[in-house]
Length: 141
Image (cartoon, rainbow, N blue to C red; front, side):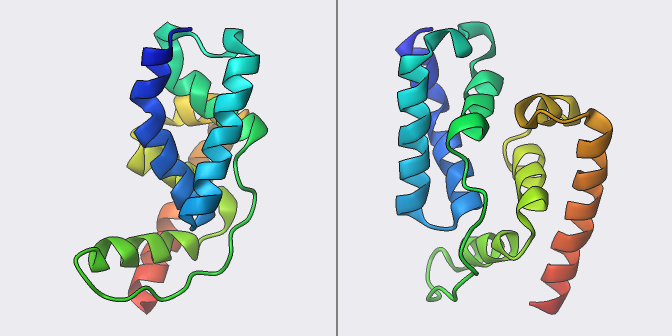
């Protein structure tokens, strides 16, 4: 595994960790745990599949399994972005995971299933539920 391959994925992984944790410090700690595991187990992240492998490693060793309830952030230049993050944080963790992997990171259902270690049919069902939940949260906010 080359460090340049991992380095190229870090912004995506950091964004993903923030979507799950809802807190930059917790997200960064999760990413650091993942990088430590990557250094200790370099064979788990291959250059030809660094995106999938690094996200899978993240979920295996470092992904937050719960997050604090959303808090209102002050309106400002990132107001719309903050509202979207708050809507994501209002979702159950499983919904948040699949929606973030598919809609934000651009992974296919099969890739999400690979990352999360579950059957594609389960991921597809979770993704459909997540999209409905996200739309419902949008209507009430």
